[in-house]
Image (cartoon, rainbow, N blue to C red; front, top):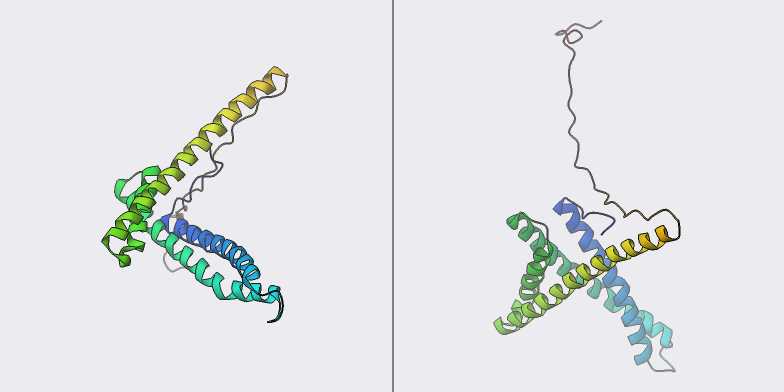
Length: 187
């Protein structure tokens, strides 16, 4: 039971997912390359280990975050296309989009590498969908068991968190009063 619905408009969802992937790539890439640069630099000379770690972060993190952002752009575009084609929002959209995007991102390596990558993408996204469903089920049971415990102790029961939906853009309707809308007269 999620607290928020997905962003309903595919354009804004695309921007949100790509930005999140870029930030995650920057954070994880910075940490990985800092540790790698720190460990691989000599202990003495050359400006020190800390300077080598910072140079490794500056040299490699933009590439990692850009690659992850581009991969998420392909995944999100394909997921939106599958969702619009199927006229449904479910986990099959992300599984199909992940399979296709992993295959497309590795098609330059050849057909067998693209097929193997697509199989990996299908496995990975199926695992993510299964983990999401398991966490959602566990959270629902946790709410029910917490409600039972609280009621047994004489406390008010927990209420499940309702989903907050983002309303669609409202259209403005202008009504003219015929009595005041005289043609061309100014008072």
